Image (cartoon, rainbow, N blue to C red):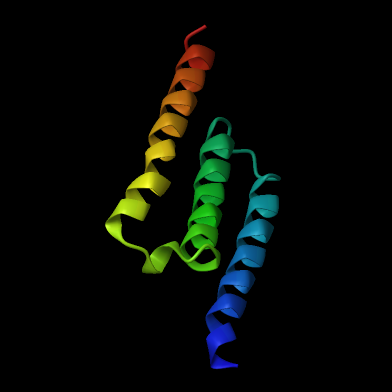
Length: 87
């Protein structure tokens, strides 16, 4: 049962973060709503990748392959936001 303890803790954290996302969606933060939602979604994705996908225990090469697409994601988000904000 001790081996499943970390998975239960991560699952509870994901449920709590989902509730926080839902709660923050009702707060008017202006453009900050998107930033907060992206931050919470990134934290949830990191928890899933680290614990459920076992990335936490992998070598550096696997980390490089896992983090490389995040660079392109950042480019897409930056490009979209810069296009939207400066129209």
